[in-house]
Image (cartoon, rainbow, N blue to C red; front, top):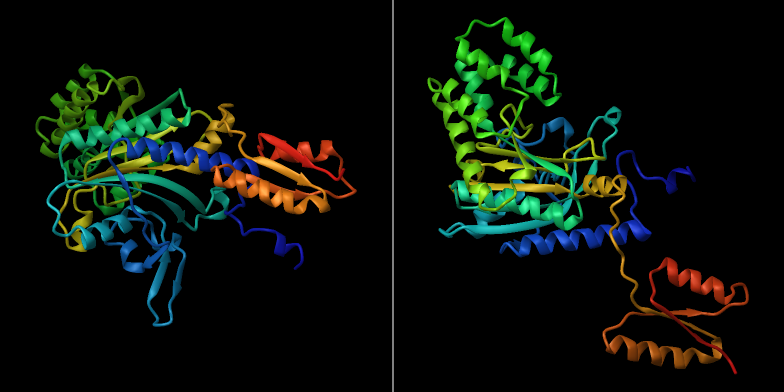
Length: 397
């Protein structure tokens, strides 16, 4: 029992010392990038009513939620995803707003993953939502800001994959897949098992152009010619065609931002969140097996809360981004700041006055009383570990 008191439950961890400081500095950089685009911060509760994340909303499956009850017997949930919470808040506080709303947030999410998956069950997310604009320009702004955030974090090599939810759903409708068949294909694509997809599709009768579109699942497309080929194949399938045309329009708008080298198009992209209705976005880099960015367009989500407003957003998984930076040996510089004042007992008052004067100047001053067990080198090493820029010794004459 004693040992258990020192350990955290599986899937959560302590973050301390320099790692915690670096995480704060990284978050500050990302916040600055979002604020430079005109986004304002919002905070929503860590737990909400169960219905906010219910099956109708299309977010995390019930079995992966941390559920508990309040005194009145209401079922509450630790948030697994912050977007539905922001959608609820916007529907409540911006119900009459007919102009776009730009918000960003930071907070922890909680998903009760199976232990064998080896994933963290608590993650920090920093994300943004652009509400009230259904244009391709809004999609492009989100993608551009995602790129700016990753560059601000210090990454140099990364890729944002962009897809459209209607490409997959359009294929399912055109081929006549039932709910079970769709779920099977969705799972195979999510696991990147495209051989499995081919096996399933081979058993179905369908027109050759549609079969060719199925073969495009799992491919990454960079050129206008490749997208034009997909458009030609989809001419008789309005939903699929609309998705491809939207991606082509998006590609043209993104050219103005000059970020094309970071963007690829993945027509077969699917998301576990069913509320997405348009573009889908995932970001990858070396040293992270999981996406560091996830997002997309969700034009119907706010209607569940009583406000009709098209929206698009993304979230950065801070823990995954931190891990990638470490593995790529990209340092988050921690500035040395503040002064450590080490004082002998008789110099206590002088030390307090010096510290007070420094704090009035806006500086950090840390007090530490001398003892007989530590040398000056020990105190200097302590100051270095804590990123102090200077050590002042106040000793008895």
